[in-house]
Length: 348
Ligand SMILES: *[C@@H]1O[C@H](CO)[C@@H](O)[C@H](O)[C@H]1NC(C)=O
Ligand SMILES: *[C@@H]1O[C@H](CO)[C@@H](O)[C@H](O)[C@H]1NC(C)=O
Image (tube, rainbow, N blue to C red; front, top):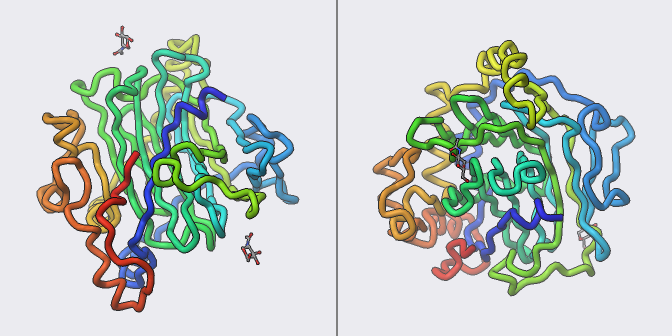
């Protein structure tokens, strides 16, 4: 399962509570839903591994991926797409989830071993009472030595209900969404060159045991006493031009109408209102960004948009200066667990 191991999850013991009423209010005004056509699982996807742990829902529109002591599981889109909108409503495993990685991503690593493209959401489980955290990343043409990770907390409990996670990918931009909130946008530019994903990719979803390094660098392993770990996907969306990765050129030509259609969608650009929510999300919930990691990248990567109010929150290693901006609010809300521990700012 090479493509799985290429994904690098990150390990931390988070200490900051994340269910803040305030933020619910902040994000709730972006309530215009996207206009999305969902498809039955069998119409667009098939099991990738651990088939016995890929369990379709009765109505055919949903699927559970399970991890037990024998195997994790995953599914893959039946086609590859050159540009697209890849989306699902996802509920993450509840209870003790240390060492577990759930990934929702696009990749062509099976076809282009040395020059693959990839766009990732990676969710990492945690010890009891500590929230899931997640990261986004992208690479193009095998640019894995120039990692572009960002890590965040969430403003809700992702194990309690379904939320929509989406990846928009056009020739012009990439946008990661949670529900209708854009959390990260990367604009294509000449300076980025081949690092911007450009070849057809498949959509993947996986759950697997990342005990070796997932939570606090491997300190907390998957505990199979709590198995099976179940993550649920529904209301799946695959919108894009299906393209043969080898005959890319013909693919591109016949795709032009679909590209235009994709770029005309509501979600293809960040409106001023949504840009405001993106800023708010990043100010409050992002705790690592490669753009502010000046030890790793003395000159920021060309696509980085340096926001001064964001930058001042980060140390030169790209991590938050303080244990997070929320511990005060959260204590007021009566939180009883560990307040601040400066060691847990998202070690890889
Ligand atoms: C979580 O754990 C509790 C107590 O062990 C159990 O009752 C509950 O069913 C578990 N929930 C899930 C979704 O596994
Ligand atoms: C992709 O990388 C290869 C080297 O691995 C390089 O020869 C090629 O020019 C790159 N393509 C683009 C579009 O940058």
